[in-house]
Each structure stands twice: as C-alpha cells, then as structure tokens.
Image 1 (tube, protein in one colour):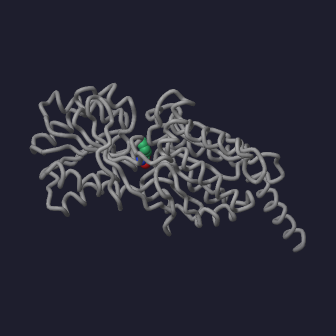
Image 2 (cartoon, helix red, strand yellow):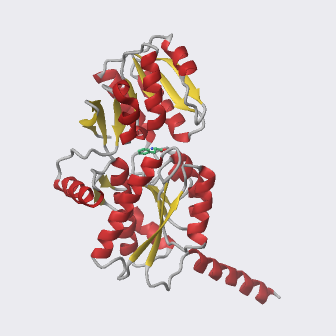
Length: 375
Ligand code: PHE
C-alpha cells in the first residue's frame, strides 16, 4: 500500500517534470510573451522584434547547448487574465524550459506565480513594478525598477526643471502607473517640493478633463503622468486645451512612436525616464542599432532593446547551466554579469539588475537623449 502510494507520487512528479520541460527534445524551446494587441500593442511589436533578433543570432552561432533555439511566442493582449492563460499554455503544452517576458507589470504579476509554481524561470523585459520579482526566486527582470525611476523623475523635475509644485495623474487599475506616481511623490516631497494634486482615473478612460480640472486648480508647475503613451497623449492634449503650459514628465510607458503621432505639439518640451537611448555611442549599442534597423526598417526603441537583452541573458544562462533544468537555469541566472545594449546586467538579491536610466526630451517631434542618471 505504502509502496504504491510512493510510486504513484513519484509518477506524478516525473510526469510533471516532463510536462514542464521536454528534455529529450531536439531543440531548446523557450517561451516569449508580449502584448501584440491591446492597449500597449506597439510595446509588443518592438519587444517581439528584440526576441526574434536574439534567437536568430544564437542560432546563427550554432544555438544553445548544441541545439537550435525555438521560441514559442504568445500574445498576452495587455490583459492579466490572458497572461495567466498563455503562461500555463507555454509551460504545459509547448513545454518551454524558460519564459522571456512580459512587458506590462500587471501581466508579469499574473504570469510570475505560474512560473514560480512550475519552476520555469522567467525574465521580464520591462515590468518595472517592484512586486514582480518578489513573487519568488525563479522570477528575474532585465530592467530597473520604479522606486529608482520615480526618484530619477522627481530629482530631474525638482533640480533641473526647478519645479516646486507638481501634480500626478495615474491609472488606478494598473500596478505600474499607480506605483510609479507613489514613488515620484515620495521623492519630490522629500526634496522639498509639494504635490498639490494627485488624481487617479479608470483604465480605458479617454476623457481626463475632470481629473485635470481638479489638479490644475492647484496651479502645479508640472504634471507627472505615469501612464502609458496612449493615455499620456490624450492627457497632454486635454491639459493644453485647459490652458496648462508647463511640462509633463513621465516614465518608460511613454516610449512609443504613437506618443508624438497622437500628442503632437501638446507633448513638445516634455520629458520621460527610459531604459536606453539609441543615441548611446558605444560600439555595442551602435552595432545593435545598425543590425536592428537593417532587419526591421526602423531604429530599436527601449522595448526592442530590453527584449533583445532579456532573451540573450536567458539563453546565456541556459548555456552556462549546461541543462534545461529550471533549477540549474535559475542558479546560472543569479551568477550572470552580462553586458547588454541596455547596460550592465547583474542581479541583486531580489533578482533586479542595478542599472542607470536615461532622460529623453520630446523636441521637434522627436525623442532626444538628454542625460544618463546612475543609481
Ligand atoms: N514599465 C511598464 C510596466 O511595468 C512597461 C513598459 C516598459 C512600457 C517600457 C513601455 C516601455 O508596466
């Protein structure tokens, strides 16, 4: 009786292992997740380009562990419920041994517990909310986190823009935008500034006049808008319609060609913090920009760069682990010290890299690199 119980438990364990990752496969299969459709679709397109370019380069050099790499890509649609569904599918059906992605913090937060429970390591490309990697020891990210990003934004606003009064606008249904506004507010206040307005809006809103009217009544020098590009463009336009002339400052969620396409003159003279600038003159970045532009017909944005770095570091860890075993990959990841196009990537105890941020100005309808800020 006892014996059967033990063998049954072992069979489940063994089946579970094979379910999670097919070790006898002829190829190394990893998952890739990004929002190819939905509220952040341009993020997904760039990120996927970065994934594909890294995989193609590894395969060109002979692959990983002597095998070709195959990426199973899934669209999370920018929706946490969909993210959970595709995470399970990648692990159980596609039998991937690691997952690269995803972009939005609210979606990574839905995928992370599934990766953790299945012991399939994941590395988010651009989810900056601190809670993501705290889900567990199989969860990594390749980008900096929002306490740092909010601090950089607040210091820039206070010291460089000489703003004394700020107002924040954010999406109440999004972990990233809510968190980033909180971190900005804490730093701006500690520097001696005053946050005179602090208004949330619902996800999917297109009319921000109620929030704007309220915060503008307190006469801020600037607006900190921690939203994604589509909301930012509309908020900027509506703020100008209401007569606001000061700068808007925000975070990495602004990084899309759509920001200027939709926002036009309303976003001119505004600033955001980001992960990388294509204007960085190091040969590593310039070679990447050249190769990416040749392949995709346009320069890589931060999302593409992070997708590229995240895939490279995960494949490097699998190679160094000498195995597709989740525990061994995880171990190898903790030892990485990787020179990426978005900077040096070495994980701290919470599996976050300690990296610099850049400040980008919207000038003449273009993103112009202003400065780099170190942690
Ligand atoms: N940082 C955002 C989040 O955590 C996602 C994002 C990253 C968006 C980079 C654009 C560029 O949700």
